[in-house]
Length: 494
Image (cartoon, rainbow, N blue to C red; front, side, top):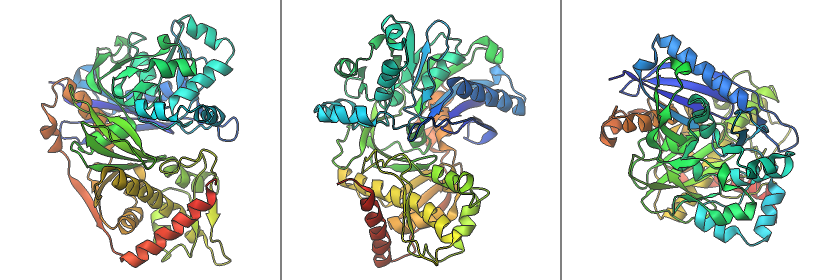
């Protein structure tokens, strides 16, 4: 049997490739950032060709770093930034427009019209999602309506729509496979999560030709094989999941009630709700979880739009830090934020508020506010936003959350993890391998080709790396969180 699983982790700001052995150890890691484009306020775009070229480059670098060829790779798993929307020509493979990124808010007016038309209940019941610019459907409708000639070409069957996973599968297979998985489809606002089909009524409402849409498959299944020009061998693409569902799987949250948070560009919390979709009354989303073949699982999800992106803002725009790693020491250099709260609503507020028009704000500035207070307030905002979602999950599920599994880049920040435990009043568990998004994709691919025999074999790989327990009392916790809630509510529209 081949020695390794290759995971392609195509994120919002960079493409990565991680090669794992059977025990889930990382044997090679390569990463390449690619540009983001901001044509107007609230708009975010990427070049699909730059997404592909960066992902291809890191694949080749990782393979070369280990000195392996295609025969040494049992399968490839793909995990990706979700909701980002790409449309390309079926014959040439050329994109017709830049990728519209999940963060982009350009369709806010379209969303308001759908809400005014009374479609919220129908879309919520069928897709598990609220109507929001976040999801792919209105982004695709915007491309059809605003890029000259595209609608006519789409209706003639000449164009393909895909989220980033579909784009990568298409490119890796030399255009032979046009497919997505249940998790990514469930984030488009066009997919019925109960019938597991594209929803004809929603497509008609948005005037989207069904012929543009990819085939939808289980997350753990063989999608196709890489073109021989990629590795010299045909390698199975056998696991596909949106990044957050992949992280839930990589954290081995296989049973009902288990919760994880990924601290990436955004913050994304998922709770496994088992075989039954839970309808949220608190602004959360109902979505499909990645699972082994033959099993459909559901999850509750809360999305925080700006998390690690706020740290990047401190570094790139404000020049307050040189590296993200500095924020841990800087935050610990002061006992608190001196009353400062920063709400980083740069692209609106996600769960549980869902205000597309909210923008970032700073509260509590005084003459005594220092750089350290400002940096600490930004870091703490990640924990506060996470707690907002956890409280909503508790209400929807009826389950008390005393334990949270964490991963993603910012979970390496010990100050943040301790503050998260303090403000939650529970335990934070950080695994020894925090690259659980890529690991989840690897596990899904490995299951599909028999590299792993079952979930229990995978669960044996999961190990706690660090544990954080609450160290403040209820009175202090209530006061801190109360200040945060007051700051957020000053941003919200009446």
